[in-house]
Amino acid sequence: MPGDILSVDNLRKHFPTKEGVVRAVDGVSFSIAPGETFGLVGESGSGKTTTAQCIIGMYPPTSGDIWFKGERINAAFDRRPKHVKGDLRIVFQDPGSSLNPKRTIKQILSVPLQVHRIGSRRGRLARMKALLDMVELPADEYLYKHPQAIGGGERQMVALARALATNPSLVLLDEPTSALDVSVQAKIINLLIRLQKELDLTYLFITHDLSLMRNIATRVAIMYLGKLCEIAPTAEFFESPVHPYTRMLLSSIPVVSDEEEALKPRKVLSTGEIPSPVNVPPGCGFQSRCPEAADVCRRVDPEMVEVSRSHQVRCHRERRPDRAGHAEASVLHEREERLC
Image 1 (tube, rainbow, N blue to C red):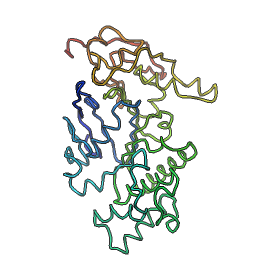
Image 2: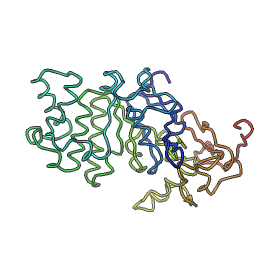
Image 3: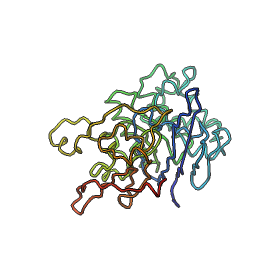
Image 4: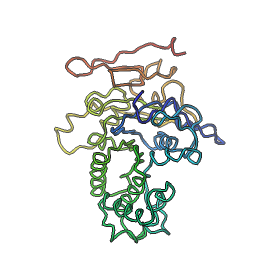
């Protein structure tokens, strides 16, 4: 949409293998507005990280388009304009593998500044110190250390400082807290929230932790077997989940009180196994695990439809909230003739 900082249109990324074609990302579309945090959630193997890798340019798309600030950026990273590389950055899941252990933190932070020709030699040193202060690491103490000499949370802070070195507008956060202790996770999340406000950043936050999204995301999208199941504003997403897979994930979130348990949707029991991405069943990819699957679900892949103005779901069984905000009974929409 006009004004969006990022728009992904029918993105597909397929990988040929000896066993067949892995449809890692299979027709994904979404957009992100400036200043928001868009949460992309899914189980391991759902395709969420591959989506981010296509956006950042690690993989060129098999088909579909990626638009950043109105500019089509389908090309691989090395072939993209320098201004796009500096304005669109990524923080990876494991800072232990994304930071060169043979370089000091000073050398690590200097690379993007040199590549993008930011500042003079003296100005770059001042910029590196400012970046470390920004992520709450004392520059004098950390500048000449190597990554293996500091903790995992501190390494992730260095990775974040490196991503911010070029003053980006959009930062992709690929499971940035999953490899960290719980106490360190909270510190990183608070840091991300503060930096977003101070630097006017936009985030694409990729995670498997739905409970994390309630406090940080503006909107949430659920991904399963390379496709999006549901997209909604965070409050509506947690209060009125529609897709059976979404409700299954929400009902599985651990809670510590009866009050929190009462807010969860009714338990959705999953049956069967997650299909192989090389051999996805016909129809809806979730139909083999869905207790509400009907005959049409086994034959026709559903379209993404609107539940409300900003709430979309890809399911043959659509739930519409009534005026009281409660979900009505499921209504099966036979769209087979139009979809075939």
